[in-house]
Image 1 (tube, helix red, strand yellow):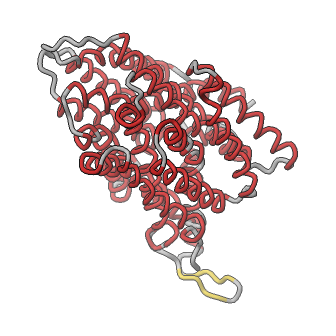
Image 2 (cartoon, one colour):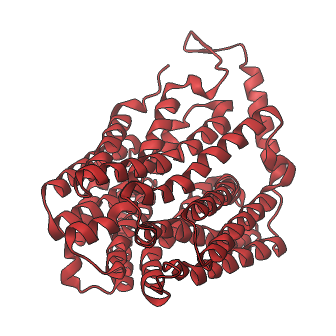
Image 3 (spheres, rainbow, N blue to C red):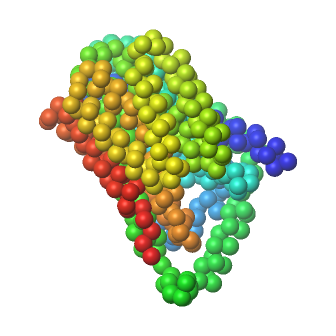
Length: 478
């Protein structure tokens, strides 16, 4: 009965995750577009991601401080209203895009302000939609529900480069020099504003239940447990002193930097791939570049679905069979929507097979999987720097496959055994999405000085840290 009751709201929220991922990934197409329209340097163009992801840090920090000193805002407004607020904020951001793109003298700083506002709305969604999905059903299936929603988020990031590149660079592109061509994003962002507003109205009218009481009961249980252990806890004859803050757990602090480097590495690669393809590989058409970019984000989608099966308690033979089927289905989907010939994309299929066996070799251990995948990404980026042409391109596109499980694995490894500090630790981890704001402009600065190709050496630093965290840094220190 419970699953039947929550089926409709979960369907709506899954659609929300899809459009959320779609718009986020659309930023990758804005970078080369704004670079051309406003004649920006690589550093300036990457300020698109700086503006968007800085909002995650700023708003999460404000939320954290308010919840510490006044109380959790969601306890006052509810999850449903928080999601609606996020959607309306994002709608306003898209309308600013629409207005500014139609201006006779469009301003890049105003576009950046709109991106910050868009990131603000998505931060509200991050804080409220994720826990709501996990609560709409039994605790035993919460991880499965969240993985499914995140999978549709990845589907949005896979489709966005193809649709975005065609709509922005082809269908609506107007090279009128008086306007500077910025109006090509006018109609697309008006359409996105309408979709976000429709979702806000739909959620407002839906019967999504108020889960605040359930959260308060869970928090009450945690506080009762904390009070019982407030002075000390005896474990195996030793006394463990209660910690006052989540920051006293080294594996969480190291995990915060792991989130920073993961988001920074993933976003900076996706942000600079179109520029790399145009300047270094010879793929001039942005639409064609967008189709290749779909393999980067689509690889992450495949890896998340396969990784979800890999971490399950399913019988090994059945598990490996399902993993192979899901990987093949994901590859078929990307192949179908990109429209390439099979000969053109066979290298990606080879990396997909390698990804499958990498999952098997990790034996469902999250820390080992993280360490192995980070090591492979270091090798892939190194190969990308050594080679050129299509071989180099497929090496960097394959990084998406091995990025797939990193965020979820780091997150779960970092919040282990935080006890009553789990919620605080989670908010600290969300703040470190800041990496998506910091690393892309740094790579842009490198690209301006040493070239777009060699600037891809920067993400290696990110994956070296992730490799260390997977193999060593995530260890819980007693």
